[in-house]
Image (cartoon, rainbow, N blue to C red; front, top):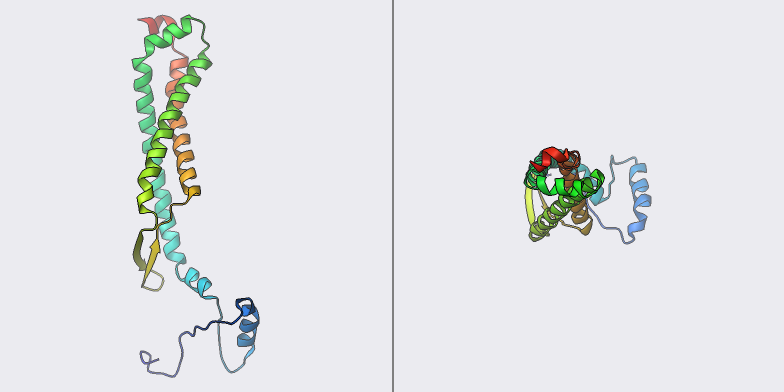
Length: 189
């Protein structure tokens, strides 16, 4: 009130004896003709205050994840093409011995998956130290400071490992397909 030099309250916070009675208290306040009120639970109020910030951070996260995913796929493609090129004679021997092309494809895809899985697990281990770390930023909706803690949950770790595995399989598919389609005569040279 002193900031606005008036007899007006910007907000009022109170705790109910019974948290389950919020709806009844809200109806009573909104039905009182002497006051104009917009009643919210405190958590809902702060959620609404941070909507813009949440949306911006989510867009940034998706953008950065997409860029890194493209880089991961190109890294897997490069690694697997190098593996195929280095083992061309071995692939020719396998095909000569009667291994089917799909077996060669499956072996290179399995190798790509194992490399990606190892990378995903290492990435998760590197993310663990930031669990619980608190940082803050400006809430662009109200120009106040918002503090939040990073939470590295088991679900996030599992999602990260699965994402790494998918990126590895995507990146390893075309080199594995090339290895499976190698003409035996050309591969032996």
